[in-house]
Figure 1: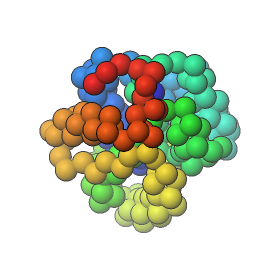
Figure 2: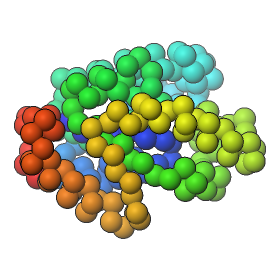
Figure 3: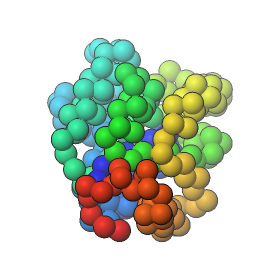
Length: 186
């Protein structure tokens, strides 16, 4: 079983992924953390050293290095599905879930504590950030919408229960069930 969580930065992919993996007895992988291990430096240094284009190449290579792994939930970077056919690859080798957190909630989260840790945001003040994130979301949405499942969280307390329920209902959806047949039961 390979489950990939996609969506905007600040959507809650890592938070949700850790809890869901624990609940389901699967390994949790944070793609950004794997990139940092591989490159032996923080994401913002990778960005500074090789730029966004170079970063996306390394990100794509790191993502695909998990093609032979199994029984995991991965929180991907916000741009992962949008470059080098990332969403197509994830859909081919696993199940993708779009964590569709409302953009206004994401903006508030990032304004409060996310600007300094996100390389794409480091040059924006709080006012510019809102415009940038709306535009970024609009550009990335067509890729996110290619995910197998779209999940709109109502609140953090129910996210895991909702997702476990959604994953359990996949048993009634043959084309999605086939994607999960190699893994653990729900």
